[in-house]
Image (cartoon, rainbow, N blue to C red; front, side, top):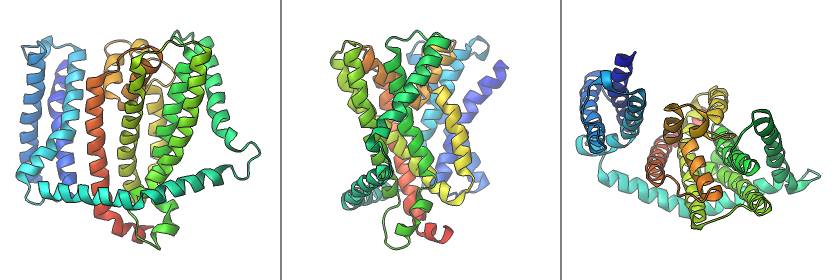
Amino acid sequence: MGLLVFILMLVVPAVFAVVIHSYLRHGDMSGRRKMVFFVVYAVLINLICFTVSWIRGVKGFDYTNMTLSYKLKYLGLGCVLGFIVPFVVCLATEDVITLGGFKRYIARFIGDLRKYLPYAMWSAKADLGAEVASSFLNWMWWLIEPVCMMLIYTFIFGFVFKAKEDYFPIFVFTGITMWGFFSRTINGSVNTVRVGKGIITKIYMPKYILLLSKMFVNTFKMMISFGVIVIMMAVYRVPVSLNLLWVIPILMILFLFTFGVGSIMMHYGVYVNDLGYITGIVLQMLMYLSGVFYSVSNRIPEPFGDILERFNPVACIMSSLRSALLYRSTPMLGLLAVWTLLSVILIALGVFTIYSNENSYVKVI
């Protein structure tokens, strides 16, 4: 078993990197070329991981003496590098992928944001108005739903399962608020193009603008919930510190990561009709692995809890915000920086994919 995990930690990141490399090349890679780059990525990624381990004091590389915790952390770091390294390698080895090409995509993306962002904001405002136009309680539903969920989960996990986290009602409500933003956006992104068929068949618009519109709706609801959290903090007399200022950057990282994942899901949702069902199942599982109702690092036995909190981006972002908001602790800045970089890479992949394929969306839907 130990040998199998050792092989996986050496091989899986390289496979992951080859997939990203092929993705950047639109799948235009021969089997032989993939094997060559698999060897290249295996050498590069493991060299970087080994160097990091050496710097942190792990001098040997004998798999029989490696702990499971070390192997899992090594594998997690390798997979993260499998996202980053292909961009550098592609720039150095692929004629069709150049720094100038990246600059043109960035310029186009920024220009489209400036041009179409007002529409996204107007559309979000219209959606919010239409959502409560025919309801008796109007916008109060944006408060009632998360508050009721908070009360239910506080009772179940706080009294039935004896959760011991400080300020547990606020702890749960924060998790529900952040998870609600992420899950609603990802669930909705799968059908964004199909739902917006009436618009995209009549005028040109970068398709990710439709996703941004839905994200603005969910962001507005999340901000209302955070207003309730501020009131709850005053009621429970939660002490605050300057670390509270980290809340805004952490929420921005959550927004970037969600947009990156959502843009990729939006593309594949056009072609895979069953993707919505799969996404729902994966999100349900991810919810229980992200610490919405409990502390991942404290509740899950070592080494899995700490590893899951570090390498699950939603869990990491959620835990960091709770640390700054409730416990006056400095969040995991190094990990947040890594997830910010990966969020930008996900956005680059998603926008690149949409720009490359959006002309075919109308034909498919």
